[in-house]
Amino acid sequence: MMEHWQSMILRDLLRVEHGFAFKGEYFADSGHYVVLTPGNFYEEGGFKLRPGKDRFYLGEIPERYILSKGSMIVAMTEQAEGLLGSPAIMPESDRYLHNQRLGLVRPIERWADLRFLYYLFNTNVVREQIRNSSSGAKVRHTSPERIYGTKVLVPGIAIQRKIAAILTAYDDLIEVNKRRIALLEKMAEELYREWFVRLRFPGYQKTRFVKGVPEGWPFDVGRAFFDHVKGKSYASHEISDEDGTCFFITLKSFHRRGGYRKEGLKYFSGSYKDGQSVEAGDVVMAVTDMTQDRAVVGEVARIPKLHGKKSVISLDVIRLMPKNMSTTFLYSYMRYSGFANYIKEYANGANVLHLKPDLIGKQRLLFPPAELRDQFSSLVEPFYQEIDALEEANGVLTKTRDLLLPRLISGKLSVEDLDIQFPPSMQETTAEQESLLEARRA
Image (tube, rainbow, N blue to C red; front, side, top):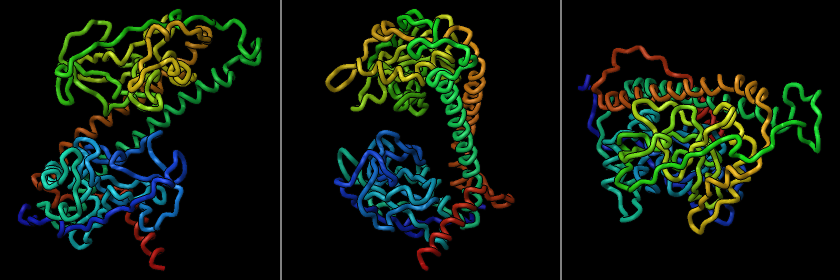
């Protein structure tokens, strides 16, 4: 019932602690402790690592700035549009560092549940107030005092925990599916490397090798094995982050070092040729790169199931079409053989790297025979089908959670009479935080 909800300001519910100014001279490209920045937040809330971009710290670290599992941090600087006020929950202890551009949120335990606060910070009501009270022209900043003035409507702590439990259950399922996807991708990679890098394919004991290469394997230019189609050039008014007649596959659709990145999907409203449209399972390659370390150019992605609209590739992307082999094998070859590391060295340009698509088809490549390609594809294709199914399931879970969140947080959907079991992650986090607190008191 809404009569149990109170109008409050965030000062009544929490405290925000500034991070530490870690010294740049101790930053490194590898190590144990990761220095977190606003770049480790999703705009919609949530924590992400950035392989190849995260910085590590090798200097002395005050213990209070080593974050524990279940801690909540919030972005105090808007490094990218929509990030200001974005929250994240730490996935593990003794790994991540509380940097100065982040705020550590501590609930006032009598009044607030930490997980409830996490979801509260993911609402438009809170984010808009934080943004409107921020300072800075080009880069917006907030502060604990500005955050404290944010007005909210909250229930008692028992109801807060019920709401948090419902939403956390969705996030836990999404996370489990992500781990299963990562495992399936690793299985596909390991099988490819076992057969075609370490050359322990079925029947290798009876195969004759000449200078380390299996005798009889086809060795030819790339265009003997695949064709390519260039993507669509576009005007800025034809693309959008929100709506259009087609999905648009751009450089933002690629993870660093390869693979499809769903967060980068754009929308397109212009005209295109049939060959520039792609379907689930198609293989695309990035031929432009704006990263300094060539992390995207030459890398491939496999198009997932995208419902409701056609998908079109941009001019920065080409579609690879296999000849006499499955898209499953072609993707695996391009992703795991090391070809990307080789071909990206042909990209050139001052600020933006460009790779000529015709160069890709001119490279001489060694492929296994058709029988072995087909045998590999028959084993790996179920992995990719399961990945597609899990990605679809996560899409449904995410959409459902996002529909529930504003209704639960606002009290429009009552949970007062529901008997809710708390998900394991909430129980584990509470137990670990209590254990760490006791250890520090000792």
